[in-house]
Amino acid sequence: MAWRKYCWSKRSASGDESLSVRGLLGIQDLPRTEIEAILERAKFFQTPQQRGTALTGRMIVNLFFEASTRTRVSFEIAARRLGADAISITASGSSVSKGESLVDTLATLAAMRPDAIVMRHAASGAPHFLARHLDIPIINAGDGTHEHPTQALLDARTILDHRPTLEGLRVAIIGDLAHSRVARSNIHLLSKFGASIVLCGPPTLLPKEMAQLAPGVTLTHDIREAIAGADVVMMLRVQLERQHEAPIAHSEYFGFFGLRAEHIPLAKNDVLVMHPGPINRGHEIASEVADSKQSVILNQVENGIAVRMAVLERVTVLERGTVGGAA
Ligand code: MLT
Image (cartoon, rainbow, N blue to C red; front, side, top):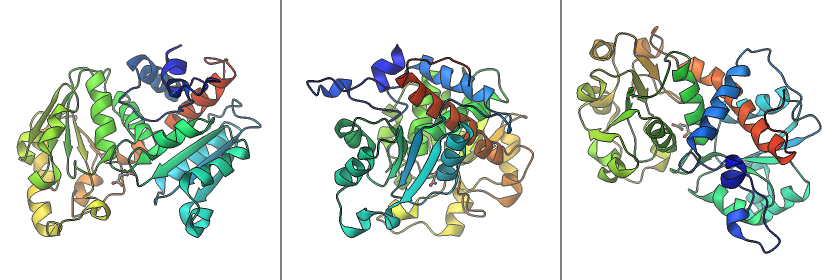
């Protein structure tokens, strides 16, 4: 089974790393068939009252070393809707603040036998590192500037609620590409499904190398060119907390790269405006666009629960070898 092979196989007695438990670490190595299965299952979970019993008696630990509202809360709701006990730990409230190493903190938690650990960390690769040390599936809820796989999955679910396929769509991703794990996961996902991806941002926030990330990616510094004919416009926040250089002044940034009402007619008539949040009104997006009929920003938040239910179920149920069973 592909999921088991790529993401969910048990560590062998010899400790062979390629067979370690991985959970869901990223989109880059996730086969298209697995993405399709998650998106399909998420559709089933989309009605707000939809619940399941797949995680009854199970324990999910949310371990967040970085700030989060949407992601942490939606993982908690998703786990509870499937019947699990969900426990959230933030770095400031854990022994990490007393100097404990990451591996020791995780090993301590692992000794309590949770069924999965959902983890966010400022260091790119932190969940991959832990997955090699622990015999518990790790779900990456955002690692540094690397990946945020469940965000890309919920974005795809949101697009597919409005379009029959991702194939051939023109998707503009605009903003701070350099520091965006959301952009990286989306680029990998959209590329696997044959979308054209236009990345747009100031030269300091759009490294040329990003054109090589996946097939179908092009770069521009001109927001109008990026939006022209777009089916989807995804806006990104400038991640000041990850920048080491002096940031571009707000008004200047908004003038060149902020999405404003005047841009919308350049895109397809039924363009979808997306943003992973948190949004900064008047910096990367005008309020009138964020609140417009083209905006699906709150649909993204809502879909986060359904997608995370699908991911949690897939990760934990597979352990029992009953994937595909009723919720
Ligand atoms: C993230 O965690 O990467 C967010 O959802 C996007 C952001 O912080 O701008």
